Amino acid sequence: MVLALVSAISGCARFGDGGDSDEYGDSAEASQQALYDNAQQALRSGNYTESIVRLQRLEARFPFGRYAEQSQLELIFAHHMIGDHDAALAAADRFIRLHPQQPNVDYAYYMRGLSALAQDRGFFRRFLGTDISRRDITNIKQAFVYFNELVINFPSSIYAKDGRQRMIYIRNVLASHELNVATYYLGRGAYVAAANRARYVIENFSKTNTVGDALAVLVEANWQLGLDEAAHDALAVLALNFPDYHAFDGQGQLVLRKIIDNRERTWLNMVTFGLLGRPEAPPPLTIRRTDTDPQTAS
Image 1 (cartoon, rainbow, N blue to C red):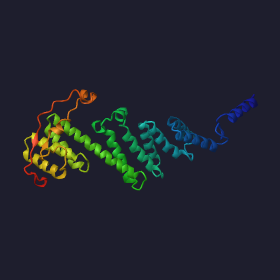
Image 2 (cartoon, helix red, strand yellow):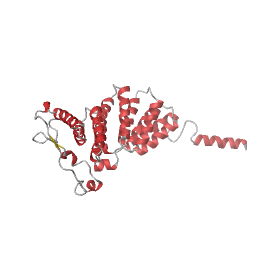
Image 3 (spheres, rainbow, N blue to C red):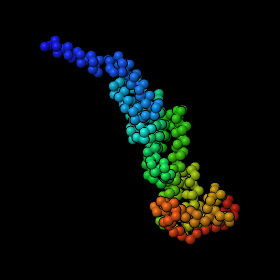
Image 4 (cartoon, rainbow, N blue to C red):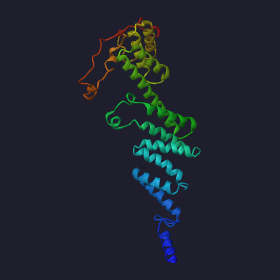
């Protein structure tokens, strides 16, 4: 009976998953290679869901194998490609924590920024063209932090140039968001808050394309508050730096109605493409310059 039991156990070990042989080959090395090749085949064919299953299986069975680190990087990519950005972020954070000196760790930093940025690109943004600056910008701010870490820690990385370009894009989004808030306050008659927000844009996002609009908001907010001198000072800066600003008419007057018309768009207005629900706009407001020369305007 003892001999029979030993023989049965030996047979199970010989035909089961134990030892160095399994269904992928005659050795653990062959099994590891086969798992990796299958994962690569799924990646190349665009079957990212299947590649995730195979890469996770490879990492689970060979956590210290020669493909372990590479499979972890490819998991970040695969999660990102199927739109599971939370999983991609978690995988990138894990790789950075476990392999801070790995030669390709800059890729994990880069993909972390991409995944954070992509978290705000949902259905409505892709197909309806929703302005991202009018939504919650928490993830956008975090993406900026991630790209900044990439650029600082790996300035010579092949991903650094793209990271810098995306940081410029994010700065424009953040500036547009602040301008939207300032415009909202202006439409609600909260002129002090509007002026503060506009000033914040001018001081902190001076190289973005929103500065002209922020100056116009500052002009209007100060004018509405009865601060004529401050309003004309802001107007002089606007005229000097943006002489072709769209709200200037042919006589060099800042016609504020051009700004007000699109300030408050209701939900009814948006879903009917502007045909219904148009908010009432106040009469046109005009601030005249004391001199037609922008450099001497006051």
